Length: 408
Image 1 (tube, rainbow, N blue to C red):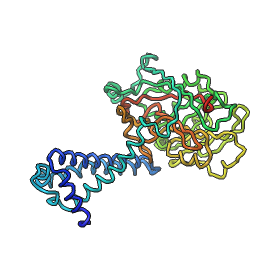
Image 2 (cartoon, one colour):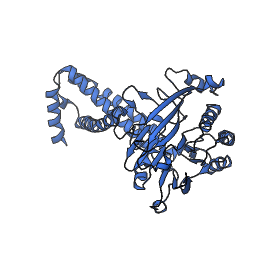
Image 3 (cartoon, one colour):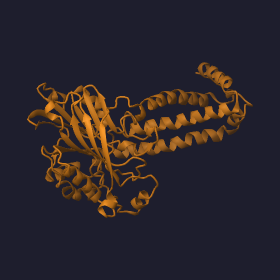
Image 4 (cartoon, rainbow, N blue to C red):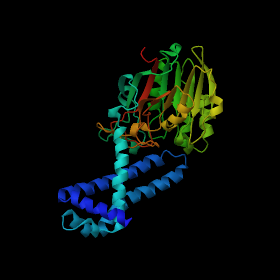
């Protein structure tokens, strides 16, 4: 290891001889350190582990993220300062510290390149879909106070926080392989309701009302319905008004595991007239076509077994998945259209760079939007709410999707 690190250190000393360049190199190492922890955080929250386990690891990782650079900076302050001034060479630092710095530069550069590659601005694997967006300031339009707690009222006042600015997005989505009979088929897509008690149920009721008034052929809800047990009692009144010609379908998400018995959520939604497709492959008739509707709740619950969805006579396959991480599963199983949520659009979006946080094995690559990888088109909603009461430049989304044959 020493034989590898010391020549690299000598080369860096030569390339970064000027103090300004050495400051920039140190800044790059620190940026890579924090970037790698963000990469870990995103992947951690895509796992199907128990919430208590994830939160325990999350707290340890958060502490380590700050402790490591602070401790190293404290112990080696004078050697680092001498190096920054150009008064010493990197060899004044222990091999272990140099090894870690090299690791950050190499791995940070690799993941940083991939992060830049998948920025929304480049539109790689994105589907070009026509959008008509109307922003509803729900509190003003309904005249209701939506923040039910002091914490929520405080959060709503944070600059650029858009938690109550619902974006009703009418999307004309081209779907490769869509039968001509389904051209113009309308799907209202809701996701990530997150009933916590922080936000008044009127916010969700407003979304359900708009979706129903649009007269969709089908309504889909892709998980994370309830976070707090008392809110289970709200489900019937909130969702029973929903109507669609071909029915209202739902799956559960990871946050639905927080209630004492997720099956009670399924029962309440079923009582409200919704159809549970979690872990199932249902045959449905859409405009007289033989179609299959799949419900993928993996890795927190179940997904359909592959043999049940291999019938080649199916005209169209639609999958409701809580997480976009099931994109490859849908591709393997010949799904034409996949609807997902879970990532909340990143919860916050930077100008040009887009989302940073995203609980996905693929990071923020599929945080929201429309994507295509043969043979599957995927729409990922930013969702309607969340446990975190901050949505910085990232409005809640109600998707009103009209399916289109490409080129129609």
